[in-house]
Length: 62
Image 1 (cartoon, helix red, strand yellow):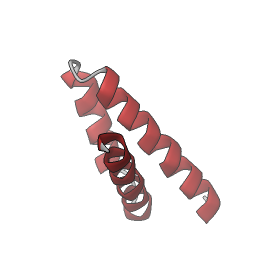
Image 2 (cartoon, helix red, strand yellow):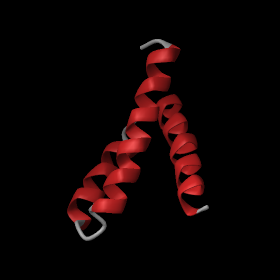
Image 3 (cartoon, helix red, strand yellow):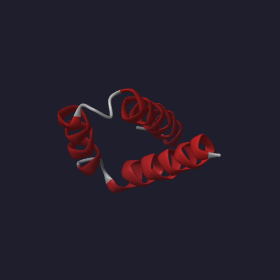
């Protein structure tokens, strides 16, 4: 995976995860599954995801 592909992947993943948290907060099983998948990401992908997700969360709470 190229750096650009990894960036696009983590952007899409973080955006989708934020959407799922907002719309499915009552579905703990789905959220748990996503959290398990996120934990298995390679370190560079995981850190990119966390950075983008944190940014999305901060923007959403403003």
